[in-house]
Amino acid sequence: MKFDKKILSRYFVMGTQDVQSESDFFSILKQALESGVTVFQYREKGKHALSSSEKERVAFQVRELTKQYGVPLIIDDDIPLAKLVNADGIHFGQEDGNPTENIKLADNLFVGVSVSNIAEYEKIANLSGIDYIGIGPIFNTKSKSDAKPEIGIKGLTMLNNISYFPTVAIGGITIENIVEVLSTETNGVAVISMISQSDNIKRTLAYWQELECKL
Image (tube, rainbow, N blue to C red; front, side, top):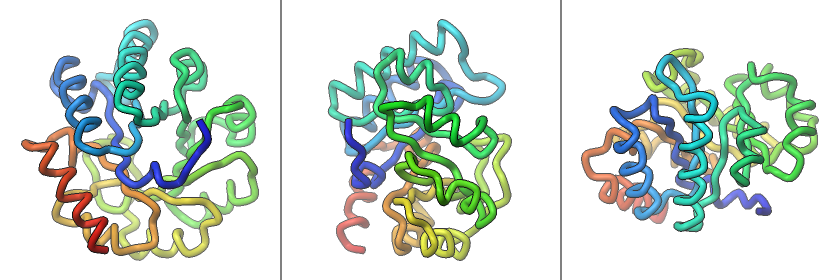
């Protein structure tokens, strides 16, 4: 599919390592898709992440669900898997290989790249083939064991101001602080635990959409 920055609005990231069980993973994903997420990134990373055939099996089911609800699918740092399941996009961190080579291999997938400071932004600023950047972590997060130091609203605003690319903010964003993030110039907000650990996903996303309309 052709990239549209509007999909960044309510960006949900999750892997099986983020929840108690695979059944929880699919239950949460289905509720999120039904309740208004605009894009989903399937991200298996960390100590308890799936790999190989198990990761492929889950990814195919994720692809079917996202298709059913008309929500674009992004795969984190796995081009072969993204192509295998016919995903829409791919996302890379700063340590996920050579950006130029990644973009070339991504071919017809849209591409997102993580950025946490000006130096990292400058490394990719002049590359063609990047569709958006993920900025963060905005706040401290427990969802990523290898997370970098928080950059805060000030860091987000600074990178938003210099970015040639559409931006999505990520990292430690919660119901309590999402208003601050939405008040910046970012094109969207990405969350893991705000949805995966919500006791009422429908209500959480309804509140999020209400805030977007107000700001």
